Image (cartoon, rainbow, N blue to C red; front, side, top):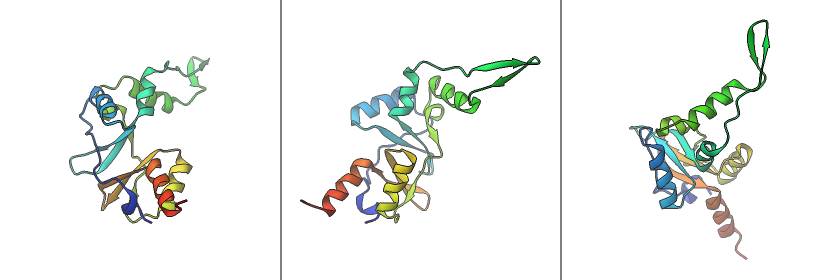
Length: 152
């Protein structure tokens, strides 16, 4: 089986200019846990998930630092702090989304997709054809395909 055989073709998406409030309402109304972010050419430029939204309700952890000869040296990862801060204060999707998400081509084998998702700890993967979004595959889609393959 390939991605095109199990993907959901009618994908709910958002644009980078949509508001964070719009995404929250969309996820709740549609009972979904994430949406791809598309540019005007229908290319996947990001993804917003419940995990991204949960960052907004967590306590912001400021990186630990020490003072050395008048300079500051961060002990934690300053890039991670910057990314978290960007998501916490985001008003628009472009500030909240995870950029450059993993995508698969519509001809990608199901086993490879399952491995990609497991290895990267992701719950969904957008499916593309010539760089344009044509579908999405969730963990539930993979489980359903396994059940169809091995009926009891």
